[in-house]
Image (cartoon, rainbow, N blue to C red; front, side, top):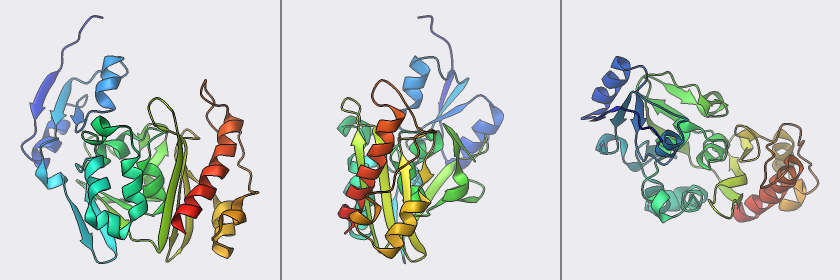
Length: 266
């Protein structure tokens, strides 16, 4: 394979990283690199510049704030899984982080990288949407409902950088996924959260982008039990289909995983 050239620079600060993005429209941020490096190897991404933000401590933190847990975009998956603040406040999110990939992936991959890439099989988008989290960037705040716009697509502007995500602490929450046996990505993952404003159910892996299931939310608002959603069928028309599972198979998985997520939350 013929190599191609790109420039590499390590950002000294968040402001430095943003300035580098503005100066090079074809540049890409490098945090954990778990998605970007693979995409570059397959020539699905050919950035002119790699701006390394992996060492920015201003992006790597987890802290409790009143009824929220705020996670820096540079926090590694294993740090979210191992965080005492997260395990105490939102144990379902800590469990989700522990289920991502393998130890090598969890020790390199970051929350911000996962959200910015918006892989349809990523785990974090389900938690962000179900918990009604707020994504804060270098320029503004974005509600979870407005952030995910499609497959590998988000509301982020080209020079915008995720800095942190604020997760409201739910009354209870649970996550369950059916992982691909090789890579452990979610063929179907469901995050269920009972919040002060109601029940939210978000699905990842099954479709082209994370989505909510209003029928399940209404049923669980009346009775927060696995049986309440056991007979709710998911329309397979817009779901993914590949060698690992048909759209109909994934539709069934969504209901099965949703029941398991409710059971975990209870």
